[in-house]
Length: 219
Image 1 (tube, one colour):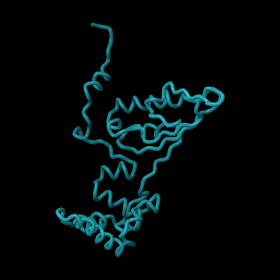
Image 2 (cartoon, helix red, strand yellow):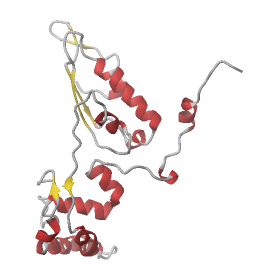
Image 3 (cartoon, rainbow, N blue to C red):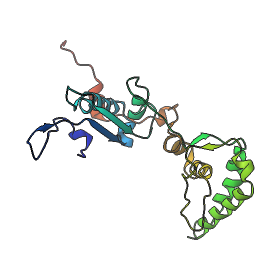
């Protein structure tokens, strides 16, 4: 049975043959947070509570409910990180690059310059630049790969013809070069950078501000 997580409370399944009420013995939680949720402390807390108080209570009392969550760390202290840090969950954080290149300056210097050197007004120019950058990498691969290790060697665009990537290490650095450190840290490395400035913090909505206020009975 596939259900949106917000519909988990009160779910009632029935055996169509016997009419017996059924309880799940396994739940699979797949990317349950959005970017908007990840950037809101209030909404992160609400979703974490929903998992703990509702989803994990769906099983019957006569057996242990098992669960698996697959998720990306979008922001520091988001839903994913809350469960990674939870001692009641076994967890594994997987990064695309297990280690980075010793000669990273070759990636962020000459390679990046070649990859970015194209005419934006020519639809074919960018692809040609990618091919030239891959030729440079192919020529200097031993030096550029030194010290770097990818978690999965086939995590690159190996089906493209012609090839614009020839390794998972190259894919990781392509994301860093094309999309910047923020996307690389969260979407590739699964380790979002800590927020260090007020400008990076998302402003709370009026509703979220109201939910944070302490209400008491004194006038």
